[in-house]
Length: 83
Image (cartoon, rainbow, N blue to C red; front, side):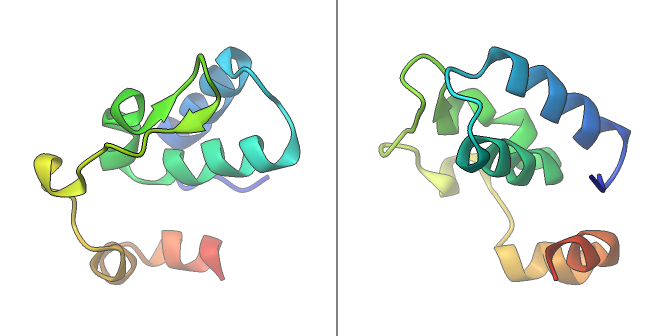
């Protein structure tokens, strides 16, 4: 598995261990949430570990996330991972 950086890898294994489900869909979800520092920092506001579902009342603008396309432009390594 290829990680964007050490923080991404650490996040992935820590959250996977805590996850209610460890199927391929949840592994992919945790992997993707771990790529960006923004989503790592706000993971508990985005995803409910207890229920195993994404929180539908999460407001992206509250945390000042950058648009997805601007993240890709800023981080070529992430762009490479997502191709």
